[in-house]
Image 1: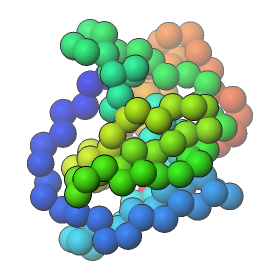
Image 2 (image 1 turned 60 degrees about the horizontal axis):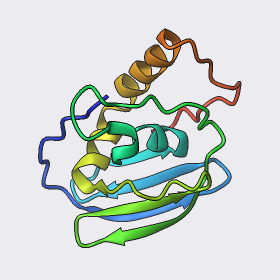
Image 3 (image 1 turned 180 degrees about the horizontal axis):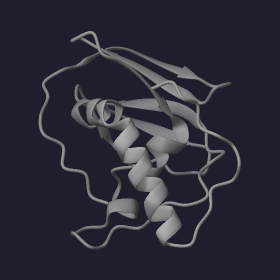
Length: 132
């Protein structure tokens, strides 16, 4: 699924990794705070591996329930590149994308679960934290 990310012109004021709960907490200068599960971030990676190089080339990400973020690398003044425990490290998450992923978490996560089901995949029983 290719995400359309309109510019929102907000920037983060703080980013925290919570390793036990596997949440990335990001606070923005407009006062918004999002707690995004690592699995959610991993399945919505903006890398070519997942979104392809053109519409219709998207690859459904499966089996990411236990993924963690080992570190976050800054990318200029516009984003971050998480290094995931499954070896994935090529997705650049812009501030606008992270804001969109936070603001639209309930709908995007529900869409992902529907696409998993339609493809015949089931998530392992590890529930996602409900904070976002």
